[in-house]
Image 1 (cartoon, rainbow, N blue to C red):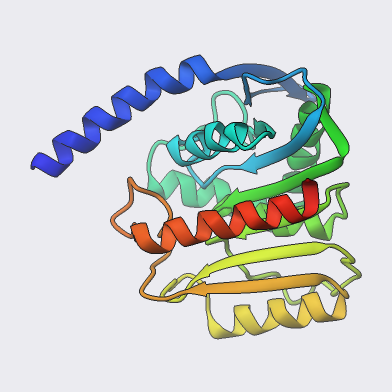
Image 2 (cartoon, rainbow, N blue to C red; image 1 turned 30 degrees about the horizontal axis):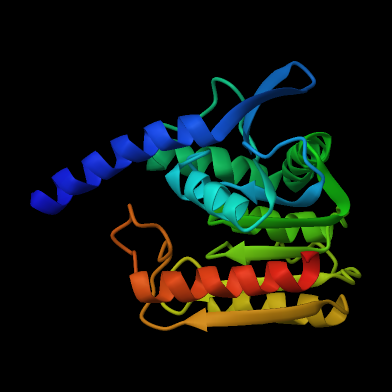
Length: 247
């Protein structure tokens, strides 16, 4: 009970902090209104990071990552994949909505591409941009790599690794970091091996780091899966990767 109250208070406090540090950016996909978030250093010429949020849309994990990455010297844009009026309210609706974009991957890739353009418009140096994603967004980071979106590297954090086997493996020729929880029941051994095969055939510069004693959403403090030790390691691995490709 005490932990729950403390978590509620922390979330409320973080909401105030985020409202000060992150600004709303409105953009469009046809008639669909989209609302992303950008860090307060927008407009400066700096390396950029595009964050693809988890399956319920823009959440505190994405916002925390954005504000922390700003401190590291990056302009950060959090993508709005679903659009205004389409934010899932529970796990069932999140699974349905995210499932649509996983199946209709071209639509997902387009939404990522539109967000990438917003990141550039807000000052990110085009040659120094990375795309990272959490959960459903981790799947998106891999889809962005498959679409050959212009980024220096891609990070999938506890993302879905599966791809329809009817889709052919193509050249990737990019840098990819996959941060994978060892006990993620949503990823099968076949999914894992197929991704390795895809990255090898695509001639990617790839790395998979597997985190022990970690379930699916191990990096999210608001999740029962949260593993603070492994979450810290994953964050440090992300920072190291971004420094290598962007600085």
